[in-house]
Length: 323
Ligand code: SAM
Ligand code: SF4
Image (cartoon, rainbow, N blue to C red):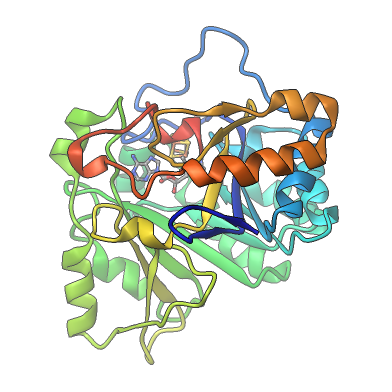
């Protein structure tokens, strides 16, 4: 099992499969995805080596992310690779939901077990102001479809934005009254590209936490494998609420994840200031060599990010790594 020098264990890999995106979320890629050279992605054989090495050192869960992962035409094959790798028990996807309904049956067939969809607002107008897209209905349709296809875990992600959704908590809560989905509110994180936007729009999740607690929502005890999200439930609601507050004290103490970018770079932290090229092992199919490297490298992981000092490391925007 991968363990760092602060006794944190890492059984969760977030694997970006492309940094390309078709949305223009104003906190992430306000001008859309731009690239001067053709973006590089790992070939399936390289991905297979990567997954086997991570599984060898105890990875149980893989989340496929991006950019927009559904833009990768080999996505069903990547899901199948994860599903066929002994040791990997859960294969999750984070997506903006665009045209996902057509693709979801094949992904579930290939072994997808969980789905997170981004829905920063439940008002179609605000959703399009934030994302540059009019596809809220499509996203919401995917929730029902995911359940029909047998997925047990469906979550919605909303980034908290002062001007856009800061006053829409009631609307979000009404939505989960009868739907067994978790709505996760994520505090806006500062990246190298969004400093001015961050200063204008960042709002702490603490006020949501206070409102929830005052209205009978109960914080859930964390399981042994739980990450940094704090989850709440309420007897009158089918769904749950999750809060991801990276600026809160001790947020990094429960970190359980490592990240690999679409071009095969290991990021020990979302906001670290270095990454490691894993392609030498991936090109050679060297599963054991890579597993040994990961075990040693994780010992150098920092205790925490430095976002509160205004330092975003190498991260220009989260489409680079998948959040
Ligand atoms: N394109 C997919 C999507 O939007 O769901 C997957 C990639 S996206 C980078 C993953 C998650 O990161 C999304 O829920 C998105 O809202 C969130 N995100 C992006 N930039 C962020 C930021 N600066 N602060 C907080 N969350 C952010
Ligand atoms: Fe694309 Fe996701 Fe970033 Fe929005 S948050 S621009 S959908 S990568």
